[in-house]
Length: 150
Picture 1 (cartoon, rainbow, N blue to C red):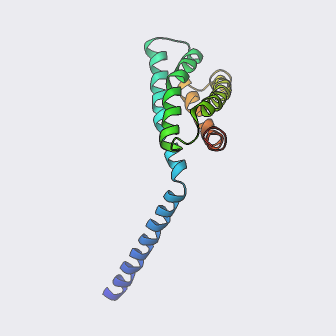
Picture 2: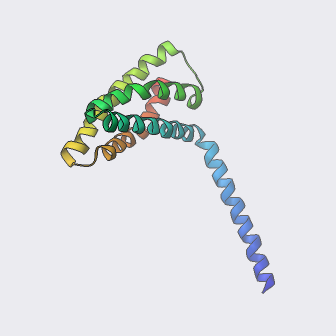
Picture 3: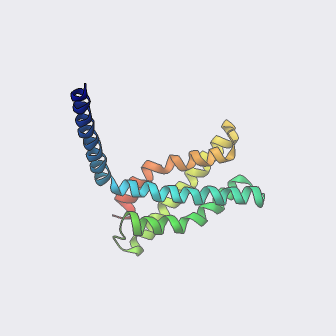
């Protein structure tokens, strides 16, 4: 019986090593995307917090609050992605106009998404805002990597 436990123990260690190796490999392979996600989480926390404050404390209409919040997070998002995610490559004078094109696109699409979820579907404004943020995730990373910070 102890021999059986011993074999299982070695087998479990090997499997654990394999799992750790797979995780390390995945982190290495997708490191830039994972950093992008982390910056996105921090940006989202700032976005949601400011959005909530504008609505709940200052009683500003949810669509105007979303617009104002967008300007607050703009500087953080650009700077963090330029410096941390994409390692500051390229010229700012080329990147900033490209980034602003993406921002304007996201702004218009985001307000439409927010309006759809809140006014048409009837979800709570915070849920609508989270759905708006999640909708940006994949296509924004690709555009930033291939167009903005190339």
